[in-house]
Length: 237
Image 1 (tube, rainbow, N blue to C red):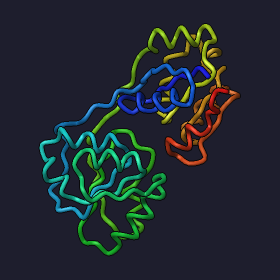
Image 2 (cartoon, rainbow, N blue to C red):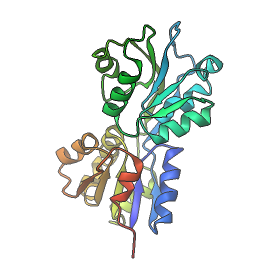
Image 3 (cartoon, one colour):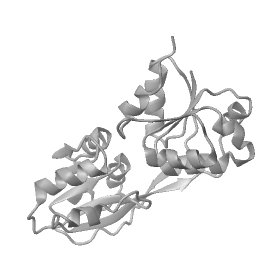
Image 4 (cartoon, helix red, strand yellow):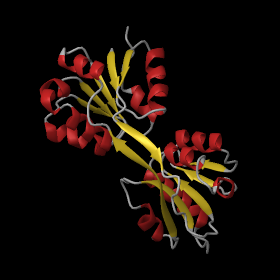
């Protein structure tokens, strides 16, 4: 199949490589650019552990002035990709919840219930859930530090726009609700053509803007991870 991947770099290229290995033709259109917040205020600590809901949080640690202090802490990551990124950033004690935000809350809540030290959540500027509030139900304090932000592209790459206009794509692969929203914004002048391919979405929440826009061919991963999303895309015979 001919696919468009809207995931930000560097993860987008990794996803594209996996899809190409399955026999697909892949075009990249990263509609968000991830930027670390180098001067992010973290608070004074000490913390019991770090929480990560994205690999981007781990990558942002690499350029933070308190990196040495941070990588000495244990990490609870939402999934295997974010756990892998944490290890690559220098963290040694990393636990993956192997799921979504609910799994992370459950695992971290069970591990740290009764802790007098707060947890440090290295978060993005835009967040889908109130992690601190949910962990509060376990009696845990969470300090949320915005350590990265996603900057939206204002236009589709010319090649992606041309492929959509010509009907040259079989599917579009989406990893976040914000990427979906920006895809729709950037393709507003050719919306009918942009909605025509099959849209493969990481979660039901990511798929909602497409449903509202009138897309009729939407598939949602059984779990919010890359492997489940790619499993939706049938290899070319």
